[in-house]
Image 1 (cartoon, one colour):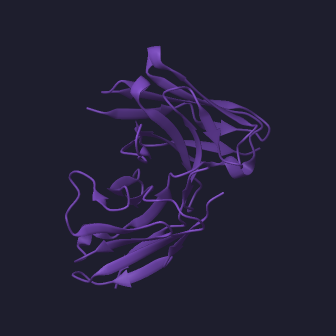
Image 2 (cartoon, rainbow over the protein chains, first blue to last red):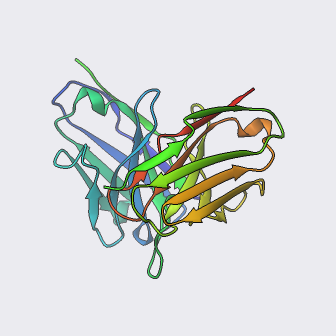
Length: 122
Length: 107
C-alpha cells in the first residue's frame, strides 16, 4: 500500500527553522518525484517545492532562498528544510507523489500524505 | 509564471444537478492539468489527470475536458458525497500553480 507520512512540524518563532520529513512506503521513492504543498488556515492549496528522481529541484517564489528540499532514497524519506520562517508560512504542509513520464512529462499527484501543521508565531 | 483562474469560487447546487467548474491558464499548458477534490480536514484527492483521464476508482459522473488554456470539470449528477472544494493544478512548467478553488455547497 502506498503511504506518505509527514512529520517534524510544530510551533516555531519568526526567523526560526524547522525540518519536515515525508516518509514513504509501498513504492520505490527513487522512481518518483515528491512535492510539498501547503494550505494556510482557511485558504487554498499552494505548491511550494519538488524534487525529481534525478535530484532536480524547483521552488515557488514565496519560499525560494529560504526552503530547501532534499531526498534520501536509502531512507525512503524526503525533507523540507525551512529557514527564516515567517508568520505567512503558517500552514498545513502536505507531501505528494507523482511520476515523470519521458514522453509526456509530469502527471501531477496521485498520492498525498495527511499533512503536518506548522505554526510560526511569537 | 502561469496563473490559473478558476471559476466560480463557490456554487450552490442540488442533488442531481449538473455542475461545471472551469480553469483558465494564462498561457498554453497542453493537457498538463489535473483536478483535485478536498473535503474538510482531509488531504486532496485526484479526480482527473491529463485534463480528461479519470483517476482509477473515481465515479464516472466526473469528467474533465479542455486543452491549451481552457479546462472544465463536470459532475454530471451531483451526489451528497460530492460537496467539497475542487482545485485545478497545472504541472506544465515551474512553478506549478493551483487554481483558487471552487467550494460546492448544498442548495
